[in-house]
Amino acid sequence: MRRFKVLGLCLLAVCAFSVVLATSAQAGKELSGPIDISSEGGPAHLGTELGVELKSTNNAGHGKFESATKGSAITTFYHVTEAGSGGNCTSSGAPTGTVVTEPLTEELGWAGKLEGGIGKTGKEVGLPAAAFKAAVGIYSAVFSCEGLGAVKVKNSVVGLITSPAPNVTGKTGTLALKGFGGFKQEPEELEGGSKDTLESSFEKVNGGTYTPSAQFQEDVTTNHGNKSVCKTKIKKGVESEKCKPGATEINTIVNPAQPEIGRCVKASGGKFSDAACTQPPTKKGKYEFKPAEPGENAKGF
Image (tube, rainbow, N blue to C red; front, side, top):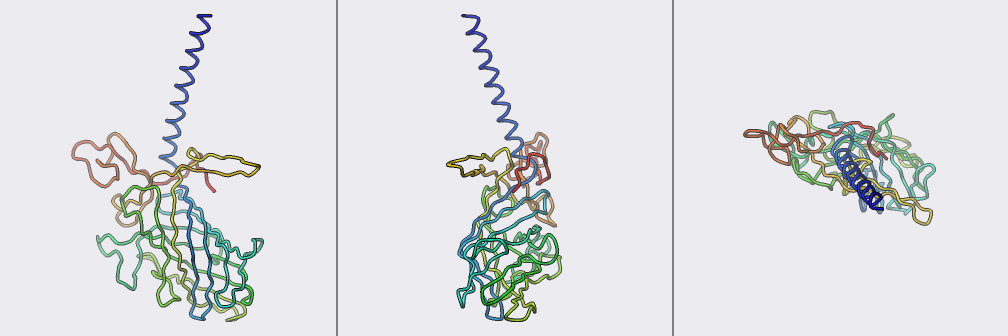
């Protein structure tokens, strides 16, 4: 019996050690590979000079960065209506009043010229931004509205990353899409890029002719690391998933020409002395910036 107890204690010790190793491995996975992002937003609207305005009560999106500057995204808008008539707008195959964007590409950069004159010039730190456009073809959204017929939205829209500030580590952030004059996007491009103004067409209003448009929207984003921080639960036959937020940052020190998204991690002999990867070491660095990258451990969406 004593030998059995001793053996049992040894097995427990081995199991406990295995759990520690597994936990450490998961922590390592969380600090490498892609960065999965979810977003939640309140009221949003699309305005045009035609007087046509589409409104949405709330939206939810998800995306993934598999490099320091490029990612993918998709957003679903709920209770979408034409402001004047109240007619519903719906994507093909979606519930009434629900509009789903086409798969989008996302690129990080500096905000281009704004009406307020805020931007990045020379070595001045301005506003990081993300440009969204169709991943395939030219349309970022295709749907129909009661009274308007087919609606098509094309070209890119640039959102300002208003928090966290550059080089500040955080688990959540905010992305704001703005416009001026009620029907023109601001900014219209990333710094150094060409203008690619957001435009919309309405079958029964302008016969398919495209007109400048402005998307107004503000989302709270959450970084989820990757599969190692996500758990799936089934309750009463309904599957749900919860992902532990993971700390990331938009670093402007490693590559001043273009903001990069990644993680500042502990690394012996690293290039930085602080946990935000902003200060060069005086003697021996303790941190290194690891940009988002592809990996088999990515959860994805």
